[in-house]
Length: 479
Ligand SMILES: [Zn+2]
Image: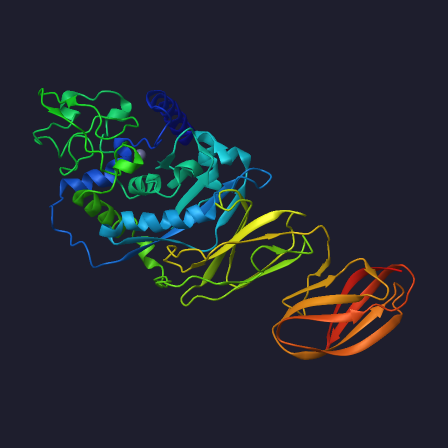
């Protein structure tokens, strides 16, 4: 019950904040003094310069949740994800923090979470947060904001539109996660008492606003463009807010830093209440200086099929995964498919017919998402379908054309991990064997032609027998 009341209160205040902000809500994080208990205790004994910064790398395991609609559309573009994480780590470089994507991306199809209010946002985090990880949700609308950190649910939600390359919303929200208040803390709730407004002379910097003495006065709890308006403190001294802080509300392009005291607080928060993050094994870091070279399909290829296309590219030293991206446009903003795989090939079986696509591949390492994607290629799918088997003998197997005509060849396209001999037979639907030939199957990508005998029109079975393994695939034959 207490939690429900808290959510209701936060929701109400979020509404107030949004009413004050223009043109759109920025950060919905509303910390109270009780949320800042750790920070206030820490600041009470803080000695500037005592904590040694630099030289130590802290890996932060981050659980990434990609939220879409009920029908699985609207996902955050993974190119933006990887580029944003790369930039995020540049923003945090002085702290030594490296945020890395822990485990698989978690896809959530739920329209109520995709565009959520405070209540559903809280439910979302209760449903999907993974303990002992920094949980971040990429959604369409996080309660009317660009993003927020929820202290009660201990998770971060970010709007896709505010998580574009060049943005700093993720850096800002992760700052909240590691204990930082806004530089204008206190003004979220209206005009604070004179003693709680940070003075230009610095005399109350320890007790007012964010409690950091190297973040000067800032009274701007709405989105503003640097240099911002001239303000006056309770002593009549005028000042401009410093818009270069990630924890201010200045436009993203203005921001480029955390102060030394903010960095010390985040590191101390990590070493203190969040030290469970340090228990994880160090993820492999690799430089990833090369890009993949695309092998198949050829650039501008016209493919026979829409339901069967194999993509292949060259491996990159140090890469543990690859991001294959298929788009409907050359700028890769309209995404058809995002695939993350440990292989250097991918078999697509669900593309649209007669459609032009663009594709590219980006190598990934656990703590490095900064590699450039390959050059892009395009291809166009055909209007035919072929039979694709969910093969246990082969890495992949497709048979075409289907239907086939008497006198034609049936082409078996396969990728095999090893070479072996196999009997390939054609059977009628009663199981009677019409033809059978022993073939050499070669390792790698290959095709093999099987003659279609003179039979009457109907369904037949192509059977592949290799040692003790049997694979069957249905084919239609017409004469
Ligand atoms: Zn904020």
